[in-house]
Amino acid sequence: MKKSKERRLEAAGWTVGSAKEFLGLSEEEAAFVELKLVLADHLKRRRVQRGLTQTGLARTSGQGQPARIHSSRATTAAAGGHPTGSCSAADLVTGLVSEALELMGSRGGGA
Image (cartoon, rainbow, N blue to C red):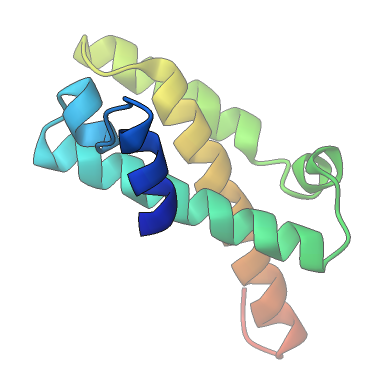
């Protein structure tokens, strides 16, 4: 956030802080959230560059559903974590892997 906006918010009585502070996250949880944000931002930029909608990207990276199923099963079996967090991470990673494999293929690399 820009410092000028932060000062305006604080002047209006708002408290400005991090998601880690607000949610009481551990260092590891905060790092995981940050990683997901960075991956999501990268995937969105690549999707827009390729002229794909979110639905179009989902169709091109059809491996997302098996990844969601496996992550949900693993989270349930471990009796910990939150399945939907694993699912969105699975979607992000699947989209990035799909993109990387496509890029390797277009460069003549093995996939």
